[in-house]
Amino acid sequence: MMQRALSFGLGLFSAAALIGLAPEVRAAGFYIQESSISGFGYAFSGSTTNALDASTVFFNPAGMTQLEKGQMTFGVSLLAPESTLTNTGSTFDANGPGAGGVGAVGGDDGGNPYAPTPVPTLSVAYPLDDRVWAGLSVNAPFGLANDYGDDWFGRYDSTKTDLTTVNIAPAFAVRLSDQIAVGAGIDIQYAKAELKSAASNFASFGESVLKGKDWSCGMNAGVQITPAPGTVIGAHYRTAMHHTLDGRVILQGLNAGNIDAAAKADLDLPDIATLGIAQNVGGRLKLLGQATWYGWSQFETIAPVRDDGVAVTATEQNYNNTLAFSVGAEYKASDSWTLRTGFQYDPTPTVDEFRTSRTPDGDRMWVTGGASYAWSDRLTLDMAAGYIDIAGETINVTRNSGFATVRANTEGHVGIAALGLTWKF
Image 1: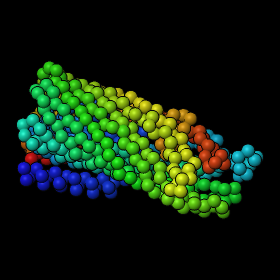
Image 2: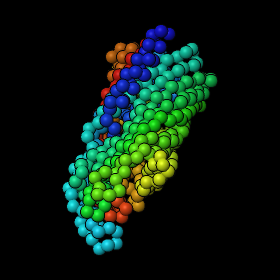
Image 3: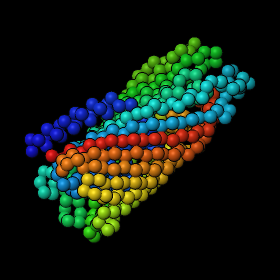
């Protein structure tokens, strides 16, 4: 028990430190699925049903009851996104809206605004007795980071975006019978954001900055049912997370109307519901399928309010709810090697009327593969890689109180490589 407690504490400290230092990255909307290296190998098609290691604590804590013994799982995914925005007629009105000064905005294309980004994750699970388990996951489930520079054509929409979240989730699981296990946990989440864009007031040019941070709490719960030998049905629900970011709104560099004031802004992150099935076929092969619903419609606006009650101009987001589907397979090739592959269709929550350069998002198709190598009864190495194709979309928004319009076509893709280790104790 002392060894388990030490592992639990080490896991919390290590993951919190690593994730706190990691750069942020864009994912589905801006949800980051890469919280399991083994699960990434089959495109997360078994995240609620196929408990391979301690990462099940985040995806479905009921899965802890499938594990053989206490364990700690650590992994890092290196994400390399690439996005291209092509100017299709962005304009700037030097005399103000409707005053007859409309012309091309000028500027470069911003290049690829994303840098290769490591995303670490760590989970710990251990049994309290034959039926009851406790666990902890620390990860970064939402993130967004891009930097176009100050001179690109879409600068009045955005120049730089940073959103970091760190989620600490203690959980418990109970095996009620040979057929049913349940689990539940608490999500304790830190969020920090900074949004920058260019600003103009007739002949003067400056910068708009919104920044803030917050702690908030939510809950999650899951169940696994084994209706027949070799068949597992899993379901999991994570509540929405509502942050009120406490920070400042800044407008600087203009000849009039500059602001530097304390302010707050709501950040509403989606609830997530997942249903999956896993089926053993012939002893060595397992087929997996899963559907995941995201309640993105809660993300409606970025609407700062100064502490003196003055509302700052809101930016509409109006995301749609989405339903993603994934399928995959796992094959036990030998006592040491397990192979995986998967496919996922992950639709974008963004809509044409409100899509922005902060999230130049489109529907994505995932293709992934992975493997695990058991070095010993205690140590397993997980490897995975994948490619995400992001469908092209359009941006057409008005910014800077009507002085500017940003019109662009988008396209992009993401390459991912991941490594993980599981230590059983």
